[in-house]
Length: 319
Image 1 (tube, helix red, strand yellow):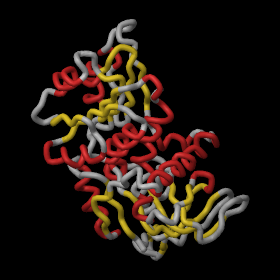
Image 2 (cartoon, rainbow, N blue to C red):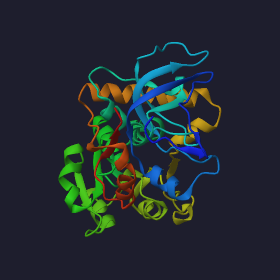
Image 3 (cartoon, one colour):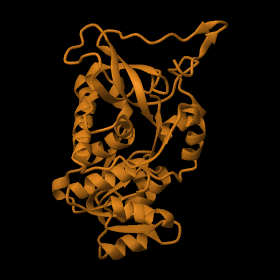
């Protein structure tokens, strides 16, 4: 298969095989995500080298392991993989059968591969964490990125008023996704603009995929009894005194679902995938594909992602 690696002298990594409850997927497309460049640089103590990166895969079932039901060879599937295991930047990859979602005929492999890490994270925020029935306004940071872009679309589908931050060059793209108001975080005072747009009240919820400092600063933007969903770093809770704004904090850690031996949480990844694929098929959701690249171009594309100025999603096409 492509990108064969050596264990040692003349010891090639073989094609993977399916264990109990697993399937082997012939990967046709794989999504790129910030977690890939972060772990490529920092490593993971659970890995053995050489390692294969890539969490988001779409392809065709090649092999079915013992105990797997409801799937057949040739079925088109997409999944979010386990960070601790070998990934999807290869022609074949292994995953657990109960975490995959069936790709509708109207959705391409590339479109499906754009979804899992960023899309499922955004879905968890909107439909697993935040109490949408009491939220009217939401601020979504980094609206031009993967998580931000999917979150904007899902928030608009839920009927919310959406504020977002982005650089000026991405304003039109973020508005096209559904943002009602876009704030240039490079030239505008975000606090002043949020207060202006909410008449001094603040937003009911913030989604922060940027980092700890940005999440901490965002606490000042939240209305009484509001919420913050943080993805890339926990805010400094001491910024808000107890018994004042009564903010609810929601940690989003999509990959953690694979590591707790909780079949309900694991299977929910497949449920989320099904829901988002349905929205794609109905043209209610954009996969935000900005580039489709070859496998050989992945390292350079991850380097570009690390600079945090990539709009939308990058996917590598293997077939």
